[in-house]
Length: 295
Length: 259
Image (cartoon, rainbow over all chains, first blue to last red; front, side, top):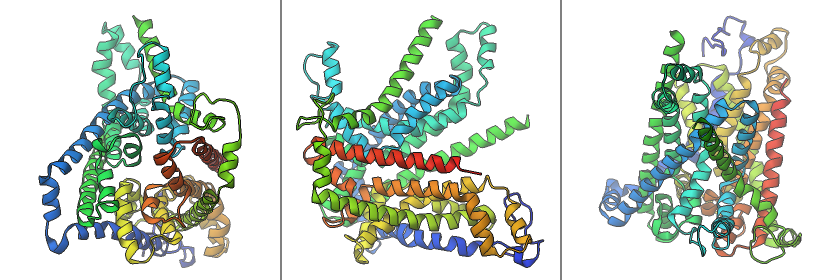
């Protein structure tokens, strides 16, 4: 710490000695030490447990046993479907926030943030009540004559997906909104003046411009979806188990710590890869933004 | 055609907003039902379920555990996170991006992975089934929120104020206490609220680390939801939602209090 600079890049060290802020090391050391002990070490411990004596037997077991492959496949399947649905639902919502005016923005933001602040557990609980046979959704469907007797909604993949979409929606809307509010709607007007239909204008102009937001929100939703535990445990049936439940089961019921740790490492790696994609998309987005500013 | 598209669009947006709000909106009314099963719309009006929850010994002890753990974790995370955020804000150093990544990574690590990892490590250290273990685990989860919040706040402070105070002869500690800290206080406080709520709502790690004596409110809810759904759970949920709303209002108030 010979020459320190403040956040505007002005050198602070030109001032007399007493002007110096306390060395960064002493401020940041507690955080690093704390996270090293209670965050990084437990993750490394899992890696160590999953490789007893350097043997990769647990990983072999995971990637050759149909049960585990099915659970990993199911996790991917559910996460993919949930991601597609979430982004599809988030897209018009973010569009309304970006181009609907101040009052609309305020109302939609409140609607978005209120559930954000209610815990995942409580929202899953609420969905159980809503989706049960005597719940509001079934009552509504019967009242409208769409169905005659209650349909089974909880303890099905459908119930899990409803709960997951609900939790992921705010995460998906925000990146979309950030990108969309920078899109100039006059481009659409121009295309319509040039004779393009709305659909054509949207497909050729608006949608391509919003694509970075779509990518960012899809990857974020997918990353988060992979690790879901509470929602599938409460709204799903054991048959459509996701990987997080399988990990918990290895530790709680099977007491096969090595296998559980290996599954946890697999989930960790999958999440890191998915999130790495998120970072790459964001960097690409920033680069694009910069080159546009330069024009 | 154009009009039809517009109507359809706003219908979809409206339904999405309803979908977002519905689960939150039905919980509170359900807690007043006089029936023994969860009904929406509720039947009649009673506060019995609240009385039942508040009077029950196991809910009381869970509430005490939750409060103790959340207050301790929020305090610890706020101190550690604020210091780290100040360092990240005021200094440039090698590996800064890496440190930033480390500080924020608990946010995206799947909680189940953290839970089992901590379970394995903490059981060796005698921290399983202790409140301290829960505090340490929840602090890990809460640090990123404090860092983000304080960094945002520090970014808005006029950077020449601290050097001015030092230049006028104030000591470094005095400058921190009387200049820097008051200026970033909104960020620190809203970070603390985030940290508190993170711990207050956390269930997955608590499922692995807590026992019958140290279990928190979310674990009680989890057990209830998995065994029998009765309106008492809705009453607890309503209380939690009220407290969260209070926390959110507080954190916005702190933000507005920015000089």
